[in-house]
Image (cartoon, rainbow, N blue to C red; front, side, top):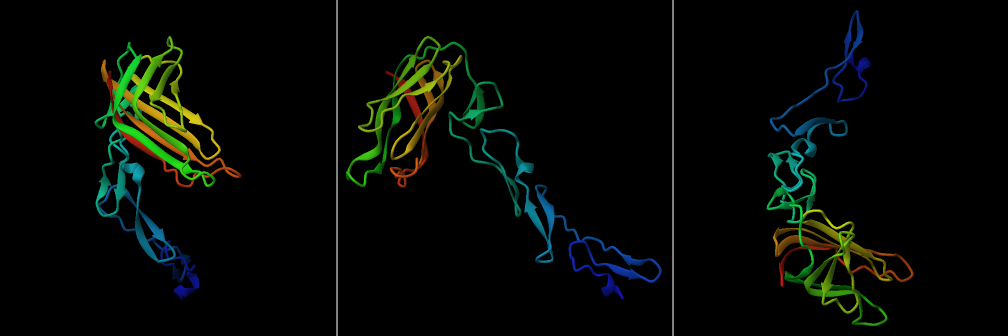
Length: 239
């Protein structure tokens, strides 16, 4: 009587009864498909084999061409190219440019004022007590790069917004033409973090990504609900 051997588990197969050898284990049902990045997994709740995507099997280890993914129907799909100016790990001191990780050139003159395209502006965290007043409010049309003797690279937006004034820094000054400056401002409405990462493509022009990130400092003053994280790709041209 095979029912006397049944353990009520579908995934390990149907047990059987042998007249001389007693209960015998079943053969687990397995179904493989032709998609290399999926893995057959047994679902005990539905009594079926499910092809689960394994995204890591599609990862080529490159940051700049995006994160690859696995689809049950199609297999591995390419990722979306990272923004120009994103830091990458494939080469020392590298950044992403047009989907490739590019290594910077040593020896560079940082100081100068650079027009940015597009112009950048953002405001949020409007006061509930003073309508029209925003805790985060900035706008800039150019950036001032200042190399303080190799100790620190400072990048200051100008003109500064009426409420949010910040200078992004990298310590020490980069040894090549790749930069990643940032700052974090604690505030009553929002904790603000700004980052500019990029690379000079000529002596007078750079490409990069400006990123804003906001977190709520909490009660009693925190009111960061309308502030949205975001990023924008910029080009800079020396005046």
